[in-house]
Amino acid sequence: MDFKFSKEHEEFREKARNFGKKEFTNDRKVHFDSEEKYPEELRKLAYESGLVTYSDPWKVLIAIEELCAIDPGLGIASTIPYFGAEVLLLFGSDLLKEKYLGRINEGKAIMGLAVTEPSGGSDVAGCRTKAERKGNKYVVNGSKMFISNGNIADFLITLVRTSDADPKRHHGLSVLVIDTSSPGFKATKLTGKLGVRATTTSEIVFENVEVPEENLVGEVGKGFYYIMTFFNISRVFVAAQGVGVAQGAFNRALEIAKSRGEKFSGREDVQFILAEMATKIKAARTLTLEAASYLFNFEPNPTVTSMAKQLAGETAVYVAEKALELAGIEAVNSDLERIFRDAKILEIWEGTSEIEKLVISRNLLKGEAF
Ligand SMILES: Cc1cc2nc3c(=O)[nH]c(=O)nc-3n(C[C@H](O)[C@H](O)[C@H](O)COP(=O)(O)OP(=O)(O)OC[C@H]3O[C@@H](n4cnc5c(N)ncnc54)[C@H](O)[C@@H]3O)c2cc1C
Image (tube, rainbow, N blue to C red; front, side):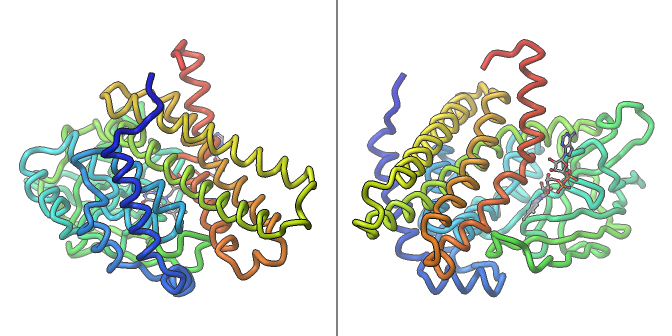
């Protein structure tokens, strides 16, 4: 067992950190949060700087952690434009890979993954958006909710119901790649979110949207399996978001504690809080790296992955809250107010903490090792 990153990865970490420090200026942090605007120029810069690269998943993980530590909103916004690409990589036909992933690899397109519906996100098998086969195409009707990049994406990997016939609800689901320029596609940006306001989130409506049959990902009826496989990948990266956000909040808390000098020295409550924050971050990071190690060695461990996602999300929320309390009145106009709002999403997307706990306990009851 080796707990050290290679020299190449440490250098990459430095590069990502320097990028964040240089490009995530205070003006940009405040502007994109308060205006609820997507920072397209930062997406391009991050891509051109080679920070989001599919050649090495460890680098993606490191970039996410470092950028989220500097600013969660801008960090996530710079790394989320290719959300869902693994579904195409793993299950897409050569044609789909060439047509869609080519543009993604060149940084020329933005994509997203549309699973959640207005009736709820946790119950993935409850998907109601219908795709009816008509000749050599599918006709899609329905709606999706809270879709990241929905209004800026060129295409969406979309979970649809292709059959009602099977009593097992999840057997009737399939995945389509839907071009957002298709007639009948409508995305409405949602505003007034609690946090991650630099990312863009939309409600989507499909009204008789025609999708060519070759845009079916993999096989009909396997959509639930493809999406669950994807979640077991993306949860590792969300855990890295959590570790980064927690580390960023901790760094600020530590600075505040040091700057208070005599006022804080000797106060056991402050010392205890700092120790607890650091210990939780260390535990969340170690678990995240273990989950990543399984995944990147092609032996994903869903139990460890859900543990990492749950712990890292909850640690981000805990550390952000404690940092805010420690800062007291100073927090009101500081980064900590925004970080506190941004952290909450990490307990929600890619499976809420409750859903992660259900996955963990179901796997344990099945006798899986952890
Ligand atoms: C900013 C933002 C961006 C997002 N981006 C995307 C995206 O790009 N693509 C996408 O598809 N979705 C996206 N989502 C949706 C997100 O994945 C869902 O919000 C999440 O899965 C939870 O679904 P829900 O909000 O509908 O809550 P529900 O599923 O309605 O759950 C409500 C509450 O009940 C709990 N609960 C539900 N079922 C159970 C159960 N069986 N046992 C115990 N507790 C349960 C949940 O934990 C939660 O606390 C995004 C959400 C947000 C806020």
